[in-house]
Amino acid sequence: MGSGNNTPRSGSPAYFKKKPAPYEQASWFMKWAVDPVAAFKVLITPVLGYVAYEATASAGVSLPFPNPFAPFLFVQHRVPGSPDSDPRYQKGVLDFVLIVYYIVFWSLCRILIAGRLFTRIGRFYGLKKEGKLDRVGEQGYAIVYYTASGLWGLRIMSQLPIWWYRTEEFWLGYPHWDMVPELKQFYLMQSAHWLHELMIMVLGFEKPRKDFAELVAHHAVTLWLVGWSYLINLTHIGISVFVSMDIPDVLLALSKLLNYLQFPRAKVAVFVVFFGVWSYFRHWLNLVILHSVWTEFDLIPEIHRRWAPPTGAWLTWWMKYQIFAPILLLQILNLFWYYLMWRILIRAIRTAGEASDVRSDDEDDGEEEEEGAKEK
Image (cartoon, rainbow, N blue to C red; front, side, top):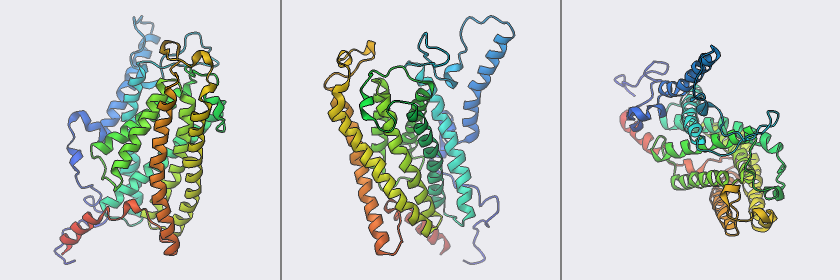
């Protein structure tokens, strides 16, 4: 390039300023989705309100109502009479308040982890194109989220009778309407996460991949599973699906991150391990769950095998198919990605380790062509 090029030098403030995107013209109502300061203000407001209320109550002032900020911060609807040594919680309308709060929470996490931390890591390793930096940020955030979610899900699952995929316990003792606090918190945070993920995809907050339609379908089916299993008191089968989905996603994101950062040997090694983990968790365990729905549904106690929502029982005979359908759809989507993974693996074998994510092919071509034209 000639001396007349006005491209900012690496290290200059302009170099680190991200190019404006269409969604950055968000209205004040959606500012929290793109601006970390706005998101932090939304999140800190209930915290300050809660502290102020508790300080007022501790000062001896008689307040006629419970702390109105508590539903933003803590799970609600404790089962009356449940002991402090083993508190239990049920569903309730205030769950929506916590979900909304955690949508903003996940937005701030994504901005800081994907938009700040991992884009700087990408620049450290020599990446300059905004498209590549965005992808590095996305995969970095996925590693952090799925690691935390997978480990937390394993911890909760280990405390339940369903460990390790004792599928008969999905049905015995139904309805599982009274939840330990961690299980309820986990469910609501997962709901908020997937709602946030679907929102940023549909509103164009990240550049679409080639499999955009499949990803939107995946998020919609996941939300169907989350909401439906929570509503009809099948949280035991729900958390089993979460664990089977989240753990392989850690290695998927890591292999893609290594691909973007140009670590070919590490990328292939991680991908091989990931391939085995994905096959077990996303296919074998998913088929185990489907088999359980189809063959063990009748283990539900006869008295609860009916449509009686006020008693917590929702599982009349036709609900078997309502449970089976979304898990089967999830398996079909997984098989679509499994096909792509086999293509990558075969390509790696044929080209002596040059594996790459087929969904990433040509995604940055438009940006590269535009930058090439500017250079000319």
